[in-house]
Image (cartoon, rainbow, N blue to C red; front, side, top):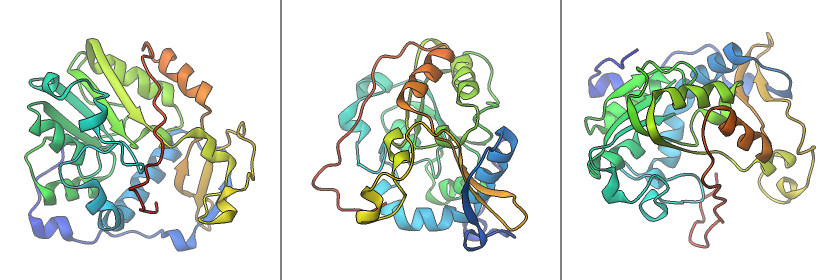
Length: 262
């Protein structure tokens, strides 16, 4: 579904919602594709304002940052040299406010920014830049076969889907022969540690091999947030099962200049 046009006033309107995170209970349980998709759409619609307010300065309006470490595509060139992007059709999945797509457009590429969250795409409209926006699920890409030269996802979609192989296959389908797919996720080792700041977050509390999804649910047991754990080996197998040939696996170190807490 194509994102409809909005005025700046509409883009700032607070979305309605009947489930909030302070009511949610954190647990580990199974969560299928439909439940995960519904939870992700609702969570990002409710939290897009806070996310963009908290991290917008770090992400910039037209900067391509691969993750909290601050790895910048301008230096990393994971999609290829910047000069080679000119004239390329690029699909950004889980684009949020389309910051990466604006950077791609500045290099002469023709990006399309796709996100599950209507509210995130409203922030993309607020920032502007003329990048085409599409509201859709990563597991059901609304594009013809062979529509793009490149696809990318900076911390978007992949960690939140129950069937990552399906996403890989969908991306493979919409890429032209020889196309490249680059995505970033949290390092799988983080799943052995609690998501807490300070010393508590540095103590192993779970098995790295426990793939049970992390779920936050409301009083009725409905998931309001879901994140899926895959080991490093799982990720490699997912990529290959999707029809790709793995070229590189990048593990960026946290740089000394980055003092931001995520």
